[in-house]
Length: 120
Length: 113
Image (tube, rainbow over all chains, first blue to last red; front, side, top):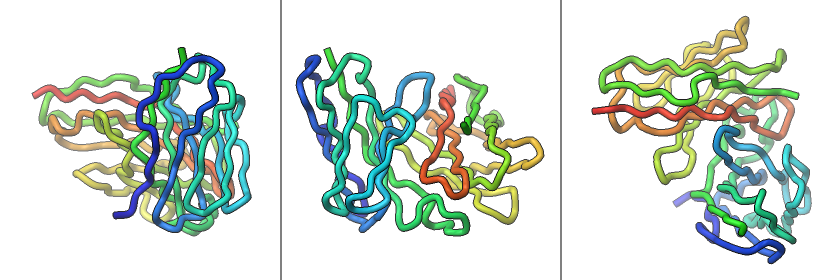
């Protein structure tokens, strides 16, 4: 089954304790992205990756890091979590050329189930 | 910067009522438009999308949306809602050439049986 898998689904941690949220997709997608969802703000993009070793900042990258060493994996790293990073996080992927005009099939994102993170 | 506005934050309807959720965006160039739905406890799923052609697009579960370029709008409609449509609905816009999807703040739809 084609899917995006995130782990952990739920995590409670304390300020300053480094954590990693993993994301893996089995669709051979080039494009992957992380979003955070907060009440009243919708989803905001944290980082995205067009391909292996190619990452770029989204709208709210502060406090986060990512890496893309393999095509299927795109982990989100919180080096020193703070309470304002308490949120619901979604990983998403898409096929080639996400964002290119005319590539209609490439613009649909497949989302993971979400990871709810609480930082105390 | 591009923005997406969903003016209805919480909508409560009775079953069989008609639904229209508003979505407006700020970018004047070529855009790709989407509606995603998030059922309680589940991840986001694509409801429908518009890239080009007929501005009236049909999606899953009887939903449709109309792209009105002059109004920068992409409103979602359904003639008769069901209890199972209770969910949060997100409008999203991809500006042609940009590698990002900008989401609206979402509309929580509650359908009462």
